Length: 616
Image (cartoon, rainbow, N blue to C red; front, side, top):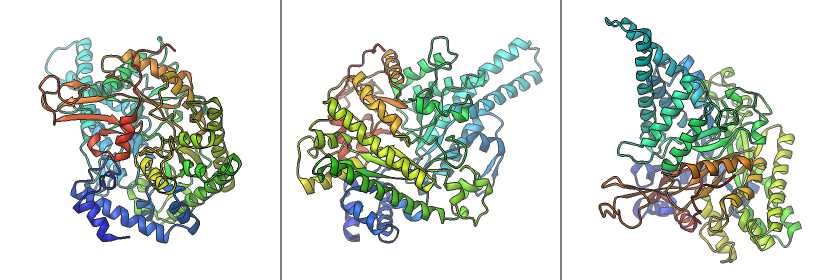
């Protein structure tokens, strides 16, 4: 490593693609620069001392990418679906004193923020609450009960009906304020030495109790209102669980909340939507909140478990690494050699994940005190501070990812899966082959290996840049600044919303570690919730597991106008203070000034679809 050049690229004349590799970090800030410097050095250490020769060579040759390699040396895991209900019920310890169980919704939501921040320092990925509504509904009820008790103690003669009405009104107000504070906290608190806002995801939508419904409604209303000056909140990434019999049909008890969710996502880009009834999710459902699928906002999904309960709660991904399908195709003389090369590099990816797993297993519980001592990770109550982690980590997932299926099909079949039925079938064959190899590894090693449709925020431009240097500019393959995300239809190909969903839906069942389908519409959806609802229903029709809808969200920082703003605000003429919120890879949203060059080009290339409602 050339440390002088690294210093110049980060601190003297910042390389935008280096310092803004992660749009969730302000790479221009002092702590952002420090984090980038330490990140690059940590990667060098991991490469030199922790990777096998086969893994190093695959990475050097641009066939394999190890995600979060800067955290490799720490032995940390990626992410976790946090058992919020247990932590609130039992209280917890952050290392500076014990936090007692909360007694109302405002304190419960404040503690939820503290839990997220504390656990973010234990892991290198995101933090999520899988059953947010079910976990917090009891604290809405506690708030109501406290108001009733207070009103009864007043020296005023109130009827029972008056007490009930006033208590309900005060409870709703308190719940809204608690949700508003949580959203503000999610966008302002920092972790990891102050360098990053915690990557927060919340799953909700299926609690049909009185207080669960109040909580969901007020959370959505607070999200719709936005931040202090009406800005669209970047976090939390919200995921509304769609479930037939609960919120999908006209006579379902929460269908009004589903429609409110469609309205809010039309204005704020969130919530996204997950589908409990998709066959691969329904297989785990037994009627309890714990059996409902939960996603990380980044699309990560953890359900199957060879070593314990098949639930997302208290579990997460251990690490994931991504295959460059495009290069595998470019070095292959025919389809037979492609599959042989694919098998070989899939095996190397599995070996590398095993190497990292073994390193993680040798870490001790007291290195990650909140994660294990507070029993966030499933089974960690059995650990003593000096215990190694194998027995609890084996409940996590090890994921092989992939990128660039569309470009791969262009090499092998002369067309993408959106252009040719033969290419469409070949794409499914390729990913089926990957899924089978990963399942074989799960059987062979008795670990939770899984296949991931890689979320390629930073990687989309890294693979292609090196391949351009090796193969030149190949039309439809290497001639852009990015490879297409996982199995997606290329953003620049003009297909209908229905066709895009139809083409991508079968991959959701194959990619058990995580998947997403999103569509880009051509205008603001703030006043068109019917269009949002029709797209969500279409996703359910095609058995999508997790989906989202992209659309422009612009806001003038001078006069507050929201809508689609071109060069200047049509109301006040402001040109500089225009906040442009866009979804980066279907899950993470952000202002475009924090994007790397590949993602900026990808956004410019996106085909925008007509936002009219679609008949399902």
